[in-house]
Picture (cartoon, rainbow, N blue to C red):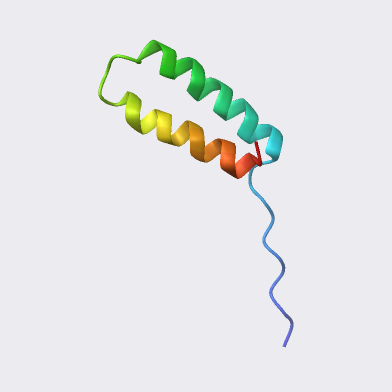
Length: 52
C-alpha cells in the first residue's frame, strides 16, 4: 500500500507577511473598537507563523 503524499503548505512565508501587513493597516483603522483585540492577536499569530 502506498504512503499518502506529503501535505503542501497552502500559504508561503511571503503570503503571511502580506496578510500581516494588511491586518496591521486594518488595526490602525479600528484601533478604538473592541474587535481590535482580536485583530491584534491575529497580527501576532501571523508573525509567529511566518517566523517574524
